Image (cartoon, rainbow, N blue to C red):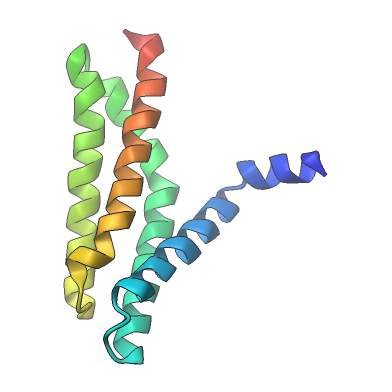
Length: 128
C-alpha cells in the first residue's frame, strides 16, 4: 500500500488533479452567491489555472533560483512567481467574467506563493 501512496505522491497528474479539484472548489465557494453558470465557470477557470500553475511553478522557481545570487536568490523567485501567478489569475478571471475575483484568487495565490517560497528556500540552501 505504501508503494502505491508513494507513486501517487510523485505523480504530476495527481498533483494537477488535486489542484484542479481543491482550488476549483474554492472558487465555487467564493462565488456561491452568484447564479450557477457564473459560479461553475469561475470554478472551471480557477481549477484549470491552478492545475497549470502546479505543473509549471516548480520548474520556474528552479530556473529563477539558478539565475539570482545572494539574498536576491531567496526573495526574487517567490516574488516573481507571485506577480506572474497574480497576473495570470486576474487576467483570466476578468476575461471569463468571474464575479468575485479577489475572493476567488486569494487562497490559490496564498498556496502557490507559499509553495514557491518554501521550495525556493529548500533548493537555495545548498547554493549559498
